[in-house]
Image 1 (cartoon, rainbow, N blue to C red):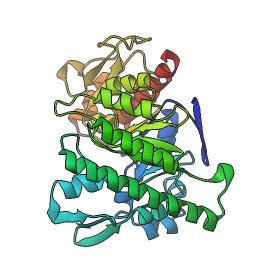
Image 2 (cartoon, rainbow, N blue to C red):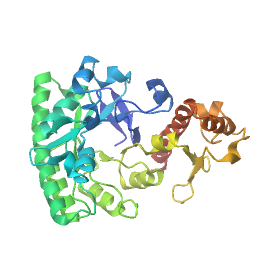
Image 3 (spheres, one colour):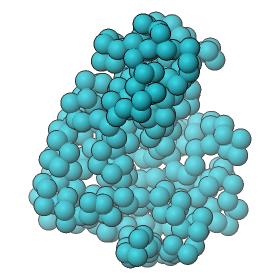
Image 4 (cartoon, helix red, strand yellow):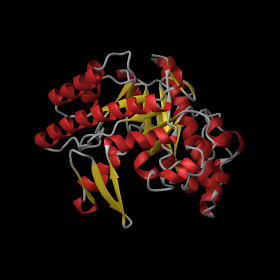
Length: 358
């Protein structure tokens, strides 16, 4: 699969999607994103339902009009965020077969599979993701098994609500948003197989890798990623949810994953950690094809060179490392914009290179 046709445009694959979690890629506007070559964004239902709130989003014309972003938007269901909030501290809420109830800043929220689909549809999303019951790879087997059972049931309910809303809103053919389901099961092959086969039987437009993508040592769960790709026919796109490290993305592209999203590149940019190709045509079979550059290092004070001689981003074409270090030293707000532009262009360029390499 070389591309994916969506209501707000066709995206070329493989693709990296910056996380505009709360409706914004911090420090950038839509024009900056387009100039970086960003094809689509990921936004998060869990966060958006809190701020600015669903009625506000509707009043502002939906996510595309609100954010002045005309290209595709994928909305994550919020399953991972609920896991992070509740599973790590039960005082914030609870998860049961109906859905999740949680409390933030003295406000109570309920998120069910049906509610998640309703919200995502009302936001005008191009790809909706079913609410899933997320786990960590180290969680015990019984917890993983319960997660798979619940994820499958929630996917059925999500699909039913999706079909109901399609009829209600008279969506058909190419103008309908797509629906993805998430495959859970931790590091248990049988559970992953059970989840994948059940979701394939229900029928979705695409699928996502569910759960934390790294082991306890911070290494990509390559064998599990490869196994899921074997389970899901190549005609379906697979979204490597939360995978954002350049080395891990390169590994997953080789395995057949075409969609990636993460806040890593933009967060690193705001903290002054920049990504640099070590040569014009990187050899992805080697371990040293890219490196980090830290803008706070004093060695950059009088450097007239750009961040990277191999980068065509706005920042590298117009600003020196010495100037960027100066912005860091005076804590100026221009710095996160310029560094984020660079890291995002690195990521979109990476996808272009991996497309030609695969």
